[in-house]
Image 1 (cartoon, rainbow, N blue to C red):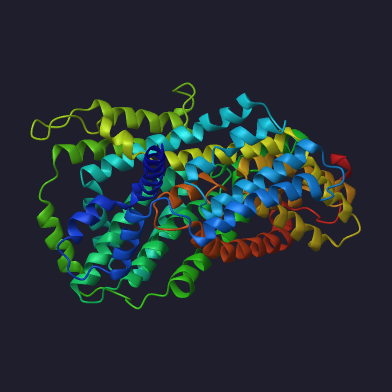
Image 2 (tube, one colour):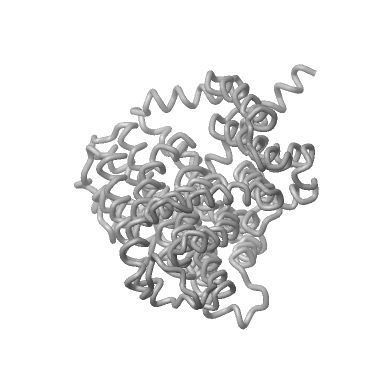
Length: 549
């Protein structure tokens, strides 16, 4: 019995590791690094620790093991949360427990993410079927399709060819590559979902990070610390760029669409695409530049500024790759068609293909990869059954767990209770109310889906505006923008879950890097809503229009 338990435990931790390794092209690195005698002792030690002690408790895990249940019982049974129902207290307590175990990785993330299925129905917050249905959300299947495409790109080494092409175009300046990925991802995210954008860019970014590591080794500038810094800066530039860019347009991110719909439904006012862009784009541009500067100069300052032998290295590597194989071309075609459909879905295909969505496109692309045969030389198909074992099930379950908790927020009085606390601000100066509303939205969206936060708190912001006799649109806009900026945790937005799935950034890394970007975003939202929004939309911040009452 003891041996069986150890085998199951080891299997779960191995699955945990595979989920983290999905988009890092670990197999490629392992093959090439066997010929490199200067492998970092730190990397060897980390690998040996994972191999020899897959299920041992570290100090942080022991702390989390105890802290999670302690917080749960304190919130559920001890803290005097007046006006909040027992069901609402239960959801808040469950959120504290699950978040603690997520952050400190007490169990493999996928297992921790299953706690809501047990705890939410057990405490009467929502039914078991409602909790379980969150794990079948369309976004999860969007991930599944995107991960299948990433696996195919890795399997046939297409990422190497794409990475070399981008390096040859952008150059081999380390800072330039970070800026390039930040703005390329941000621009694409203005027009398609940030999830689809990050899905497209991340395999390319991680491949380039590996290639830059090889260039550093070739020039004798390599250290494990330098490679780690560059890799994390590229990954964060993609993840943050996707979130930042989406807020520049009404169609770029769900909170903006929800805001526009609620404003029209509640007040009969249409927020035009042009006015929104005129207001939001300058803020997004400043936030993007500042974030890239932060990543390259403060968070990850590189000692290696440029790579002198980069051009010749690219030429040599392209020659080594040879001509594109049939499999590379086929995977590239599926990847290109999927990206094209993602880019053009909202304005080209919605009236032609019934029910088309990013999820439908991703799953179609994945199915094609399992259907298209490889050449006779290789046999089989572009993707085979073995690829299912490499899918990041932990990450998919993590997203499902976050959605289950969000369902608990919306189906109990927890959300309305939190929102009602805002009504205590009636006599507070407007700028303070604006700041608190923005902070509340941007804080909650770190642990809850942005769609839920926007849907719940935008109407509350409108109610608060009436209570303080202020125009409702600026407060509603600040809340919607705040809800879209989930930089700190993988459960806040799907794109953050994806970059966490690379295994190259930890939750602690996300908290550290995301905190300063979140603070900067909060300040920019407050300033732009307070000063620029009234000019663009021609309204008075300090008056609730009688026509809207």
